[in-house]
Length: 418
Image (cartoon, rainbow, N blue to C red; front, side, top):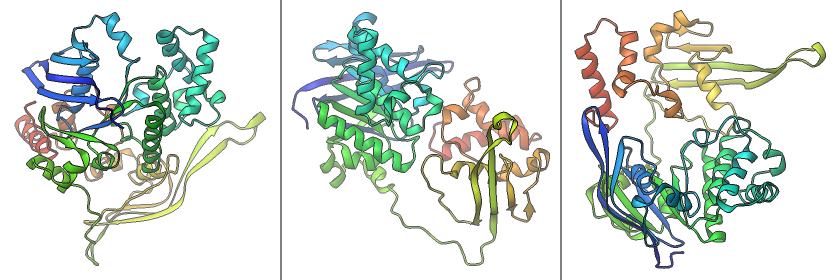
């Protein structure tokens, strides 16, 4: 519940990035504030500037970025603090959790050591004291068997458990403000609900303010007290959440609300052809060697599942982490070896090898969960988008490739020039 006391106030914030094509202004003189104990949502489509606003507030911009304006936290402008002064605020009074915990957690260190380090750094506790506090935090975020999990490594935990660890790390120093940048996007729906309810419960217990950076209007509608709507680096509308949803004023806000899924769907035609079919698909993984020379240990990740996808049809495969849904998808696209029958149109691809699948790949596409793990940091976006054309249509001209890439970027709402 908001107290009326402004603990964070952003005034005329501008964020610019130097690129090979010149300077890009990502945030254009915005003003926002956060009151003690309230939940604020900053919403907008990808590229609207919402994440860069908070990264600038935390002084975490990339090396080619610069911010101007005022980020006032309890009377101090965070943009002008020295590194040592900033470290007393960042991670201690203002904490942040990100979309993908695997990019934030160090794979080489145990969960316990990664929790203990910031506790000792910010609070000056001894190792035994910090260990005790780390256990308390894991219990607070409802990690089962916290003593054992202190010894675990990030890859040994589920996505939901890793995000709980990130929340524990963010709460280690009892912050005034927790900034949550798309904290549940990479999680299954059931785990999303658990994480959001956990954050709400922790807010009630600890009295901190929460800033959600999100494109999910469902989260905003359910949890936010106030909302800032951003587009192209500007705040186009702000207000109390209930009033904004009931009577949006700006055309962009109206468009966002109109774009919320309605739940209605159109059925495929009765005689629509089957495009992709799996019959009794089975995927088995070897998870270790046998004991004392015995048979290897095997895990059946997909157990005789059948699925059909018709032309113009959308199907949903849902389930919790580890249920096998992603494995099934990869098997249907022949990215994993499997048993059973898989057909694409008139082609039986059950046993198709890499060479046989190559001409079909342009018709069978997959969007992975984590773009950071899919996009090469060594390639420009133009190179990434045109790479498939180089493979499947090597004879077209460079000009045509570029034209198709530009058209594709526009189709998904991206400006090819920025």
